[in-house]
Length: 469
Length: 107
Image (cartoon, rainbow over all chains, first blue to last red; front, side, top):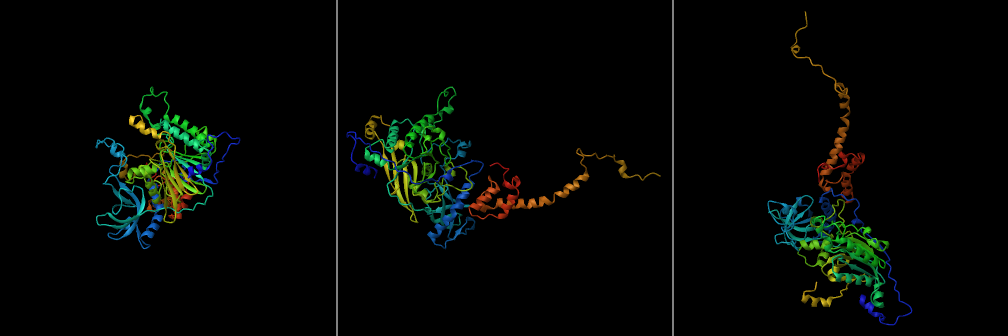
């Protein structure tokens, strides 16, 4: 798509210099609105418990689930509360799931001295065949058994189950359903090809020289300093760049200096200081040419709990001179040329990956859309701000492009919803590992990976000698 | 002849001293007269607010003020009783009215 357009123009490299230089004007963004207001936190108060966010989640999702239950099991199906259940009677119950996992790291078990347990080493998945599902509504909870996939579901999902309660006090599930996709406003058709570049996991400060070359190549392609006239013309069609998190590498987070004595760490600087300076220079080059949205990620210097607040502009003294640089929140929502984008830096998907049997990040991304919640595990295993008024992670409206960053590999898929919603799902891979970014075509809603590797072939030779990465 | 001998004559006579602020038994009567009217009304309103706190339909009540909980219930469409809002509006700033039943207990 991108390279076919580029190949159509005549080759001008290695030809004598011409009198007039070709210039390409970048496509201007016709309309842009940032709708991440629900994710901005003003005054923060941590004097509340998390019961409020679960209560509002259930209250807000209940009407959607009751509609879906009636569509699926007939309009005559009775939706009952747990306290009204009669044994043996078939009915539908709406509630929040809780998965009791024996392998889930529990701080209480770790510090309990009577068990004398060593802290559990981190695992990639915490699922176990003995996991149990419990459904909770406003007043009671009940164990679930039956045709429900225990290993796939995670805590915090709101769903509707159809079945009956048995004499042993457990609920026998025959069928279950989720809230499915939210209503979607159709995107206005565009006349020219416009691209949005999605990059994630730049991993600066990680010490890998390879990824720096890849990052510089990326910046050069977007700013039109690389390639023939064809590539420069195609690059002029990129209307926006979104950096989806993990701009700094995981190694900048090491806190060894805290444990060392003061006299040893006197002149040392945190690794993130140098990395942020590099990031500032890269953002300066990018924002001089194209509007950039910077989302914080897991290893970036901002708060840990979701929703992560934008990085502070004081860290980027050079780049903030340009108004094209926008520092945005972690779940980021915006409408670019009429196409609604919604994405996260990947913490929600990787947290569900740890507690569910689903293997593919693209599948998990689709599942969060079907459950109508960005991160159902939020207060339980993923840090979250104690909201009390509303749960801002519920999808109020279905986006056209839904992405998540820092995944192990690139993936993209178009899914259909029950009311003809069409969503492009994109898993943006970690750039420091895969040197791949994603180009989303706003006109046709197609996504294409673009790789910047420089030394790919030589890696195999070096690997044999043990010199490769 | 003299007065009849009473049994109380065998007890020592103790004069009652006046209190430090010039308080004497006579002053208690007007104070007692003021109290009965406000506590009854207040008590009824506080009882109404306590019942609002304990109602499960509007979600958890700890950690937020009653006004915040009422506004949240209104926004989510749960139709909270308007009398509660009237009471909360007439007593702004009074922690007995504004804070929930368990606000004195930590988290």
